[in-house]
Length: 356
Image (cartoon, rainbow, N blue to C red; front, side, top):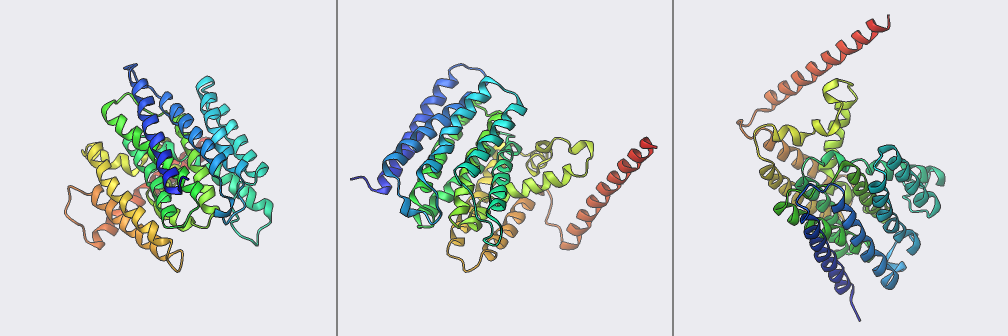
């Protein structure tokens, strides 16, 4: 009889080899493929999860009330959403499809998170829906090169896989995260030898749907602080681009063009070198995220890891300069903030004058 480890290894091997084969076939076209790689990946992943869940489902592993139909439903939706995107590549249509799928999964199958027992059940459902739908549109911010996208996905997936090995997550989530890691490791390997393997922004939205599935279930199992630690860098980037976008300045209109990563690359560092630095940051987040599973509170380790990530980002961002003192760093920060506030003020004044 197969053990959990044997089943997990078989699924990871199937996804890794299947994805590498699919990417090799796609690469034979010798032209950029924006949608085919993720479509193939979603089909392989969905097949592995659905088949394994039917034969090896263990309801007793979960502390939440996730059922088998609720668990595999996103796996059924994912290839369908990818096929719909291929057939009708319209952003509004995709947004509607994603919203409907998230709503059906949350409200119909109760695939949700209890944020607070003091809140009414419907409020928790609405918050779960908004969280899942929001996650759908985060990965496109990192669609700057395939390496970065794969690294950030692998960070979350490998982190959740290690949580299974230390008995912090059930087998089904360990299997799901292991398969996601295998598929994106294959994409990272194939992408290094063939630059035509890419993922479009619309397919990145579906990657967000896939990660949202993992996020919702991980939160429902009570390991949200571990997940927060794994995803610290993406959350920092999200806050940075949203803060800039809310200034309504024209240079910040396109979020993905104003990430910290773009600023770092613009400092004459090649993307492969930057990606190696982000691999180190990912390793730090995974390590501390796993320690968080044994922490007595949910604040100490994520807070410490946040400081470490900030320090690593600062070192990469200022690689050509000697370390600044705290006073010099504060002066530079205040100067940048003051400049942006002046530009925002000018824009508001212009808008008021135009109305008059």
